[in-house]
Length: 315
Length: 315
Image (cartoon, helix red, strand yellow):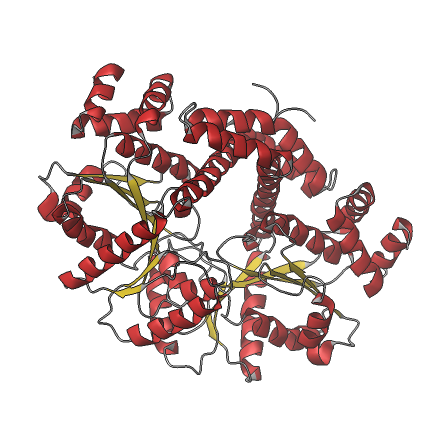
């Protein structure tokens, strides 16, 4: 497939072309740059919904369950699943088919999983690229699934207008982090596995954490979901739609997109700079500087000066 | 106090001089650079122990409880407490006195709290500086207390030879993150508030998470502690000493320090580069680029190119 064929196929919503476009853009060659640049003017129409939460919190189940009400509403939906721990680097396609279940043959559903490719650092840029392609391919909704903490984190608020946080009973850290102001308050909270003991305690903790947040015009709803219960997915989707309606007030969506894009660009620039510091010949350079500091020939601040100077050298 | 007086005072272990030296180094002026450079050759003797864990997991209580066995062993101990959410930006001294309790008048104990000063990004460098000064001031043990996740994270493994993770019953996220390989396995795990329900379940989860980790020569012990129970602190300190003994085998401490220093230098260099991207005039530049991308005049990758070019311009 030539780049032109890929571009035409993405615009026509063809799954093969979409998959190829994402791979081309991810490869970061001149062809991929061109594809991204030509698709970019077609973006900005998709409604991007992030689903975040710790490993094991039930994000994949939530995303899978959301497909039914989204499709029932007539929306085409793309899914970008970011999992830095996934063993499916090559086998992602098979994993995706299994996750799609009843939607595997539905042309209105497209899923792309991305695992860490050696470096966790590359995931944020790869996720951003995939969202761009799906937006340009005229999916009405793009669901971005990503762990909310730890190494290789993709800051979901940079990529989504609506952020859903999945928390399961017994998971205290997320609530504690919200309370302490270390985690931003999500737009919608899903208490997953709500039939397990501890769901009431979690809901009470959440209410207390949310009461500490500065009062704003939007109060994050807390929705309880259970794996095999369909009503939960409907209620969650309704809460997400309520947030979309909230954002439709003049100026709100614009402000949110500006904020997200500023974060996205800043994070991608820092990621590139980090690769300059630690990647390739930078790693050898870092090693030498470690030796110098351990031998007390230079102090850490001087070593950092040299690393920064090296990273900012032309070429 | 002149820089020379400060330097002499630090070497003599005088608390006022130590506090002043940390403030000078943190201020990042030429005087602070000189102080850090002159103190650096005196470092490398302290045993640096990190205490990490989510907000509310009981880190401060653990650190406070450790002071007794550490002092009973005759060691001088410095504490660096990093709390990005602390409201004590100016009032840290009072907070520290309260935390020190019975050790408030003990010249063998020094504590320094640091809160986020506007930018979470600055904390890693500030913590690194404070540890350098305490090491140079010949404290035998330096305890570094920091939250292990979320924004403003200070990567504790970069600053400490022994990492203690505090987990309380009901906190599932940390264990899940370990299981998923998103969090590095700590050297010692403290189950805090071990008298609460759920402590047995947490211990079982931990055993399962640890069994998934690649087998190494060191198996992280799990120690149960309770706030008012002294035996817990003694057992925890013993576990930390066991890890120190483990590191005393030829090559191990060196390897650990090399790895930590490489992380520290890399993180500090990235932090400086991030300030170039988003700080000062960089912020206005980022704003302009956001406008251009939203108007679809340039695509995100081109905007990132320009941010990186700007950050790497000389001067």
